[in-house]
Image (cartoon, rainbow, N blue to C red; front, top):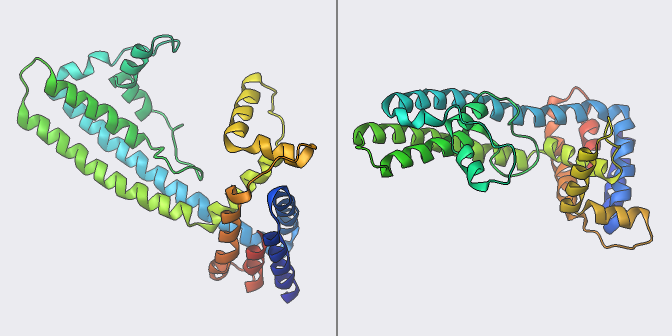
Length: 279
């Protein structure tokens, strides 16, 4: 099995010598070999499970916090009924009315929609706060502020109690978010998925079923990520310059931290050692 380790080390060293479009071509060649090597497959699975668990844990905690915020909403509505006057407000049909959309974004109707959907979840990409918790806190805070500055007499202690509940929830969420980002950005499993994403974008399959909207979204995503420039460098005579820094750190993370998974793998050390060299 030492032959696998040696081969992977040599491939990684060769990969590190490349730059620009050549780096992406070599990365794809190396990654394809890695996925076909039987002695590496269990190690790859370990990494994928790790990445999925990081995201799953955050999303599950987010769901529990949504339940807490629903309770705070109910308390706020019971104390200040005017908060819920927009709970049946319909979402504007178009963006021709920016002020209408802004009002909708801050409505209890929007709050309820967010709370009752499971389509808003964190993923292995990005560093923004994707949680429902953050969106719901923003709406509740705006509602309480409107009560405070409004013309009606305000029950000060009740308002402060609601804000304190939100503050405690927000602080706990912020800590959880930071831990999530640290785990995600330092995970070799997430690095593996990021490398896969980039390799997919090098030669993406057409949408199935074909959709003009999907094509436009893919084109926009490519433009924002610099993928269109990479395509020109790889597949035309454009000689466009491309920067492999979008993926090189993820490859390095896999190489440097693959051995940490050996103890959790049923394979011999070379299996995850081989994973290191893959990127």
